[in-house]
Length: 361
Image (cartoon, rainbow, N blue to C red):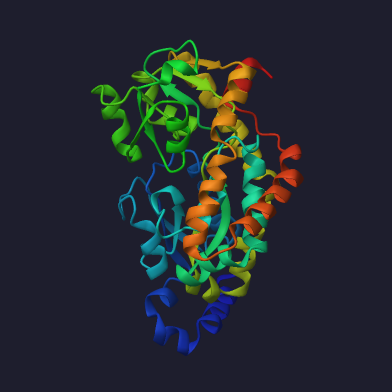
């Protein structure tokens, strides 16, 4: 891609009307900001880094991306508004931090319903394409284009002290995120909502007995195992769908050739790069975790089934009967689309859980 050709295309794509309505976005056609509330080593950051690196590489440096990690540009909870208003062109959004602003998207958040994180990514993609209210929530209400769906791989139950069974969770104070609080409370624990950057100190000070809804990669990257080295696989499936989004006006104003490059990278992510990247990262983090004293365990199949029965279908029905109705959407229709997508993609999922990697399964 030659620079001269790109600049000509860029000028044509922007147009005088676009410049008049949003000059800051027009000027950012070959340079944009990526803004994330987590570090560059956190779970989805590995997928985001792939997208950002490939954008720069495949455009021969014509696209330049300024990267702001760990809330260095916007704080936790500010990123959705930043993308909507165009002050950040691209950002990672974890819906659990925006429960009031993203009621439809919350219909994608649940546990004990499927098995594989790489399949969850495709489930979210399919429902986004098929269910108009979900797409409208992003593209109209928040003026953002979902570039690709991602997620936080798998979330073990992380505890300071070992347990003999799930009965031992009763009364324990466990950090929860989003609908992870439903699981904690269904299993008898006390859910404590808390932003990710505050968790380590809370464990260290004894405010928390454990953590749930914190993905494995980020838990190790944030060194939670220094205080809470007992990691349990409770059979809950993939964790926390998220989305990497771009301001819609900025996306629509990109030159055709640049938008095509972006779309090709996204196709590669869905086509296998998500699984490849995460499989490698999870394997390395399992090795690191075990070398630094983490005990990776699982609970019995009977306890997994018991936990599943406690959580589902009550968790999904709660969303259908409350959040969906309040938002004026057909929750049953959305969930039927989700069921069809799970049936299609979950049997083809390959991304192993940390405990399975540890055991060589």
